[in-house]
Image (cartoon, rainbow, N blue to C red; front, side):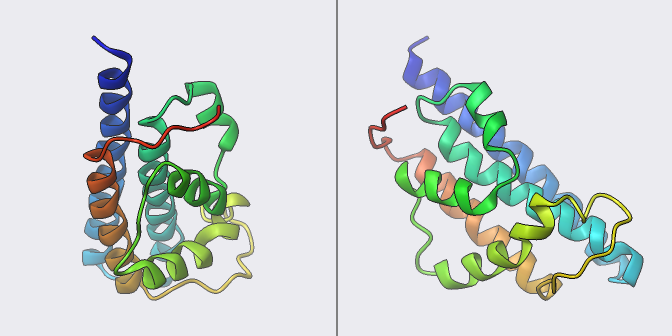
Length: 151
């Protein structure tokens, strides 16, 4: 197996897991957005976005240690995925708005723990739509030959 095909398969594994988190978020939303469901719902959305962005990054010559070090920093993941060829258009503004709204709560892990959440969260349906749009563009990026990067 060539290094390129291994990296593409690794990126696809990240995308598959991102889609699984997205399906879990959608299932949770179907139950109803009562107040105590909101943090787990948005944790699933944010983590799915993180894994989707890391799918593009993982499709390049980035080792697993570096992916782990990147952590939960959604803006950094977005920048690195963009450097690898991810194009968010035509829905880039909506995707970036949801990603931006979830960036700090995800980084601070306040969605995972019973901590005080002072950041406003996006509309749940907008979050699901943004995630769907992001993951569609990630799939497109994985089907496109990657740009060379400095590692």
